[in-house]
Image (cartoon, rainbow, N blue to C red; front, side, top):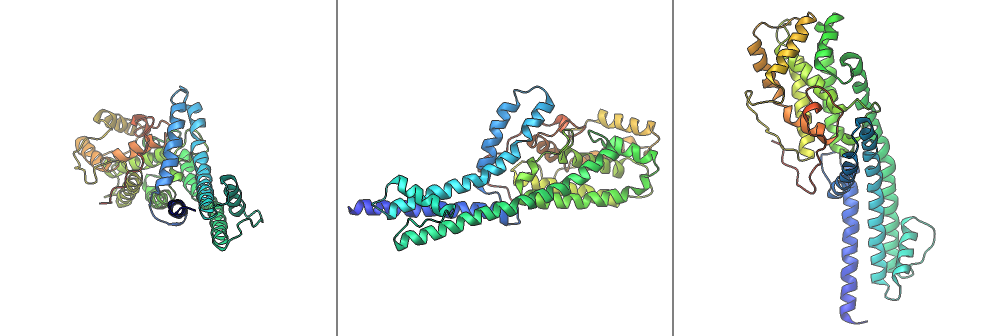
Length: 368
């Protein structure tokens, strides 16, 4: 065999094995590493499939039809990802077998690769180097399948924990969730003085969502079982209710639990925004503009006052305090709502873009 052909075959084998290692590393980053690490293969698969769903979804004028379409996006993308892992492993090892066995054709190399990858029981690779490659392929194939088997239960456990509070919010804030409805209902049943328990509950919820949704980025796109429910609109409702409580409601003293809930919420949403490379101002001024207008705020205060909710007298100061809280999460809330195509809800997805695709292969910004 000519020296040039030997060198080219060896180079092909090295490149193929490098592809295998990068594929396995991508699977480990996506499934195993409990940290907000965005694997490029994960990004490519999800963004490519997402754009296909967007093209189809934009042609549907009815929200419920689009919701039914978009509900398939995350499951299909998630199942496509391990399929691509297996295809890359299969084709790369086929290239390795073809490179180290000059007498084998492409079809024979593919048969050898498939036999080892899916552990069919045959032993077609006769030489020692081929057997070593085959054993490693069988191990990688079983490992990728094992990762998928353990990955799905972990994801659905986190999904169930997230959705439990989202569904319970229907009782307190209606559908779609509204901060005004939440505060009015608590006032009517005499529970305004028991809101601290609610803020503590949602403070933990925000922490759990940040941890699970940055470790498993696909969770952000899994839609609720009810078409008009969404984790991001629920988050916006709770944050707005907490901001109104801290700024506008005339309760006894300062509301530290509400303020801590707001901080927990906007930090969680910002870290999710970092994961998807969504731009925002990490240190906004309290006087910076927000998407909620003064007229909308005054209308909300009028609705609360008509229901008998006690409000502070200085409405200008209330607006300044509310906008000072809201500015911390206003941008990330709206852009995340657009990213996941959330159902329409007041003060969140009703003013966000209908679709907002994440960029491809852009390095996540450092946290500040």
